[in-house]
Image 1 (cartoon, helix red, strand yellow):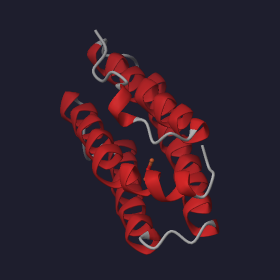
Image 2: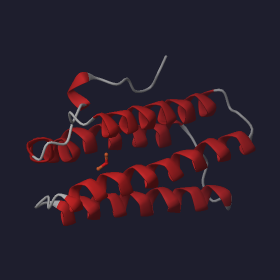
Image 3: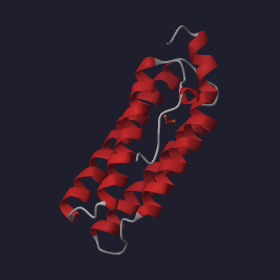
Length: 135
Ligand code: FEO
C-alpha cells in the first residue's frame, strides 16, 4: 500500500506543478517501499539521490514561476525550500557516512513535510498565479 496518495486538494491548478508534485508523491512512495523491503544500500542510495535531485528541480521551477510573476510571498516560500533542501542533503550525507539509518521515520517525515508544504504553502500561491493566467 502506498504511503502517500495524491488527492485533489493538493492541486494548485497549474498542470506543470501538479505533475511535479505527483512525481514527488511517487518518489516518496518508492523510497518508502525500498525501505520496507530492506533493499540494498545501493538501491536505497539511488532512490534517495533521485528524490533529492528532483526536489531541487521542482523547487527551482516553482521559484521561477513565483519570482517571474512577482508573487509577494516569494522570499518566505523560497526560505522554506532552502530549509528543506538543507535538511534532506544533511540526511543524505549522514546516511552515506553511516551516521544514520534510513527507516520508516524518514519516509514518514518526507510524507508529512510534502503534505503540509503543498497544503499550507504551495496552495497559497495558487490564486495569485492562476490570476496571472498560469494554469
Ligand atoms: Fe511544491 Fe513549494 O514546493
